[in-house]
Image (cartoon, rainbow, N blue to C red):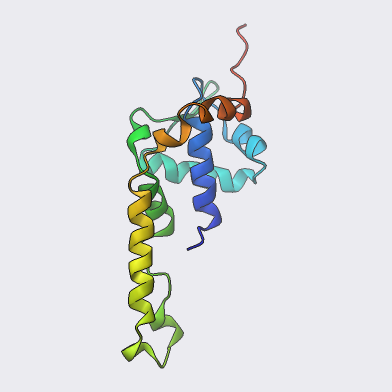
Length: 146
């Protein structure tokens, strides 16, 4: 199963914001991850609705990893961005083998197993040391005191 671009971006944004002690901006995330700002903004909004990020508007606003989000699983994020649909959409393709096809059942089993593995991985496990140190080098620097 190949994850769509938004799912990949969501996981990378979550991993980048998790170890950071300060809020970051959508522009900074886009720069750090070399992604289009408009796409990052959409993914950030969805991550906020999923409970992974909190966003604060205004001059000193930004994006931060939500309290308790380290317990959210990768499987939950994948489902939020990929949906619950099947790997193959037999109805849409009008496949003549649909009635007696055994492949669809096996693909469904594989997808269930794939998500079951990801359901065992909390976001916090992705950013524990030594990964946190590396991720912090990618994160935007904390703003200088004025």
